[in-house]
Image (cartoon, rainbow, N blue to C red):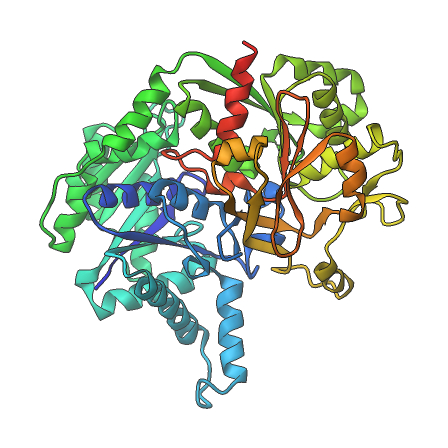
Length: 541
């Protein structure tokens, strides 16, 4: 029988429930238990694929092609597992399933109730994920914060599970401890109110993780223990870490969180083995030599604030590779639109050891990205293009080296006379019928690696599986011209013959992928292409 741990948030969103959930999983794994994790998003969207990255952060794609919340990426990175469509649900997906069942008379003519059949569907999905994974522990993160009406149905599902067997269910509240500067002390009342909101849903938290800039003192812990009805050893300080989120499992374990969880489940405690995490943290702290990487995108500015979550997997993949090579990554976001407005600013690219152009959609900033590709190509700056970043590089090469001056992608210019990037054949009907959600080329596809290429040197394998999220591709009608200009198509899908990897001859490192290698990078096993890229940035130093 699996044990279930529900993780909810209090006070404000975005305080790190996903990292806390992943860290709890890592701690349990370190004791020899198998773990899986589920993310529940309280949105009517059926999946995260149609959400603007500036509103919701990166869209993470699972191996079986589900477009989901970025927290699934955190789970995969921390737990070193591959999760699937069973590990993600939204309000929209749950409602769609219930409505489909009602239309198919699967409720035998009963009146379908929101506050019974919806939580029942949620419960069924959680148990199905537990059954398929056969995990000892199932972590269920409920997005948003307690007290929001959007998550009431998911809390009801958790309460129903609690009623079925209290010994198999545990609740963790991740709550923010406010420390207003004008007052000069931490205030516990918002956390107390969050607990009361949870109580009103019929749930009492077993463990409270207090997120804060500074460590809460014993007075604050005692007050929360008293007024929230939680023993003090079950109050865990989730203080802001100095260098990386990979310190969090060690931070929690120093406070015996793993032992507390096992005790509450009545499971005999076993020693934890956190050596791998200790080594990662040690490497991060001891790496002094910097590698400076510029990430050229357009999903950075959210009003007056910078929103790095849009490219979180790319940023983490850079870190994984740099840390493993004994380097301290300095990553800066560069706005592609600025290079369109003022081409003279392209000169700043010389100040970076390498440039990455990640994925994206639409025309905004595209000419700036093409200019970045050209500048890196002409000035021998290591360049890694991911999905749209590869397509941008192909457009640049077609225009500059093949003489196809108006070469473009039909995503931007449907009438271009040289569609070097064109919509995939199987995607044309989807676009005509406006079937956008969940209809791209998604998930794992095979890639055959060409021997004696940069890709072959990096992978050391003949065939790999990589994750995709795109509708447009390199137009094979232009392959010969591009190859004559110096392109090497070092990765190709063996069934469709679609280009998966493109690299350029006679350049320190100029490589693009149609897939998203960042999605498979792990802190303890960096992705080969990111490793190769970071290594090259150091060769000229």
